[in-house]
Amino acid sequence: MSILRHKLFLAVALAHFTVDVFSNMGSVLVTELGKSMALTTGQIGLAIGTYQLIAATTQPLFGWLSDKIGSRWFGSLSVPWTVTFIALAVLTAQTTNNFFLFMILFGLGAVGSGAFHPQGAMHAATVVIRRAATATAIFFLFGQTGLAGGPFIAGLTLDYVGPAGIYLLAFSTIPLLLYIGYAMRGATDFQPAASSSTPSKQPVILADKVRWGAIGLLALLISFRSWAFLGTVSFLPKVFQNMGWSSTSYGAITSIFWLASGVAGVLAGNLADRWGRRQVVFITLLLGSITLYFLPLNSGWLAFPLALICGGLLGASHSIIVVIAQALLPGQKAFASGLTLGYIFGVGALAVWGIGALADTWGLTLVIQMGAGIGILSALVALFLPATRETPQPQPEGIPV
Image 1 (cartoon, rainbow, N blue to C red):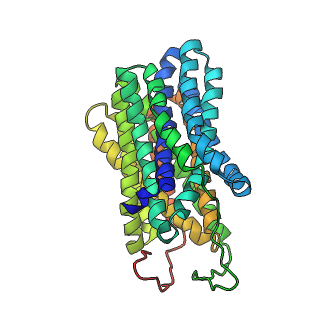
Image 2 (cartoon, rainbow, N blue to C red; image 1 turned 90 degrees about the vertical axis):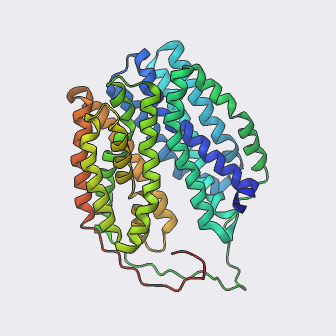
Image 3 (cartoon, rainbow, N blue to C red; image 1 turned 30 degrees about the horizontal axis):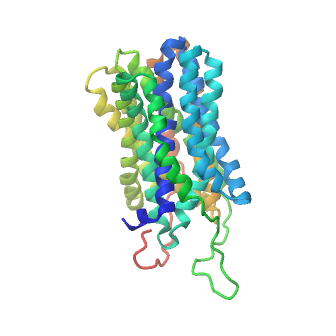
């Protein structure tokens, strides 16, 4: 694949994979370390939710800073920052069993994730301008693979090596981190500008009236969906640890949940273009929520196909929701995308806090099952979103719409 031959693109793609692997180890790491620190479910939720909230809310800030001062140092240092602080958090938990100290270091690790993603996505889209859409899709595929691999890698490492294996994983990234620093040393931040003497080839987008009612409905849908999807996947390790599963097993089922969401998202996007966005969002969320009710009730092999189906259906609407947000904020697609992604993961972090707190009183299984009802509410809200009404526009040959 020619895009991967571009050293800067390959660097940010591999960096995306690495930072998401270490970031998404969190749910398995906190669950396993929680045994020695005697953590409650609420504390586990607090740690995971805090990481996710910091990673989500710092992205706009670092995006703004990258525009102002450049991204070379953010790109070179953000990944080793996350890897280092995750390793230090594990070391602190092992040596002190102090939850507060662990939380500080674990939360600082999220800053690296927040710093990387805005400039990583920018470089992915600009290193090969003529293939920006393809390059961005490949960049996010590397990240989604990292999200899926993180829990399984963490579980396997903890089972067969122990917490010390996390330090070995961190050290193993050093050659990659050196390559990232080398590849980004000459990174140039730029925005292609249309010259006054050269007519722009891009169509001028006239700002339509912003539909605030529809935006409010979409925000409500995202809130419910984030509880059902992000809240659930964050506690899957704890659910199955309570059933007596090993770290490898509950890491694997968490990875399956994530991976299914990425694959299903591609399929759902294609169906949405054919049948309409709100119809696909409604059907996938409804069926996924029904499946979610039965997921925490199965401790045997049936849990794996249920996780595959549930993760795929609940996660399928992710990219569709971003596209809907872009349509509701015409002419502001970059802003709409960033705002939507930050809101999705920010609300998801709050959901993790809420699930953890409620689980200490009502039990984790019941609270996860409550997420099925909340997911059904999100599906019902989808029915009230504006219908897909696209005015066909002439497209350059070979560019997908």
